Length: 175
Image (tube, rainbow, N blue to C red; front, side, top):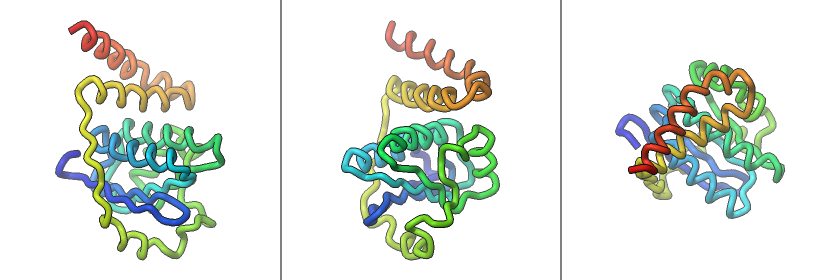
């Protein structure tokens, strides 16, 4: 994670709340994925991503959110987005993620409790997820393949990225 961003989280009765401050990017998305994976494995069904203080999100971060949502859908779970800025909302919509993620759902169980939830974040230690070069490449590739599977437009948009990442994995394997 870089110094310009932080991930705080809290487990509540009905959901996992993850707050991204600064930029949501390839560098902190492994932490979001790890938190989400652990929560889903423990039987959790609702992950809320708080973007109130998030200055922007890159495609890897968005692909990570899409991957979590796709894992939750078959078990009647969801990823919900709280307080996205116009910039973040526009980025999510540009890749069609507004159809996969619930953005500001009016009947969410966290409605009316946001300030209390935010006040309770940071009491648990956020796991620092540091990936080696190969695992980081795999993570970025997986995120972009997830986005590519959502639409033909995304597939075309990210084809060069996924091809380059696949080539990079081959080079890493050959070394």
